[in-house]
Image (tube, rainbow, N blue to C red; front, side, top):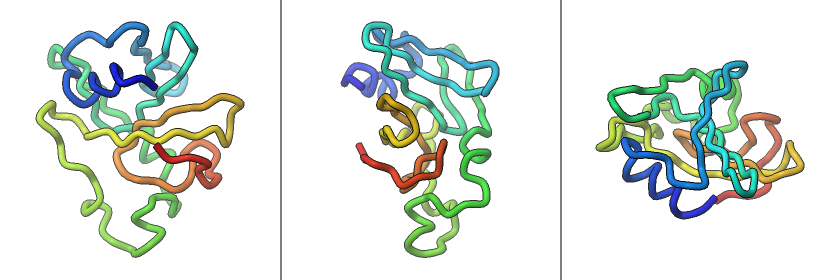
Length: 133
């Protein structure tokens, strides 16, 4: 993932997605993702609330669906704290602050995930993450 998409996600979600990235919504899975037109890189956005600009928001249960009933978050592996203590606060763009992780444990290419809290296991295959970003 390049710096232009990361800066966009952190600072200007109301604007246009920077080239060569495009924002996509998978109707089958209900997941928001970003694809790089030049190299095919994929960033899955698993945050529960994402500002799409123009007063539109993507509200998703994908994160809860993928992590329900397991202890794959970094917070739960150390001490059983209330989940609300580890959730990021809504930022000035009224969306969940992204945490970027990447993994290649369940696919043959590197996949990036935008998640609302730190995790130690891949949300797709539940294996220990090979790499943190």
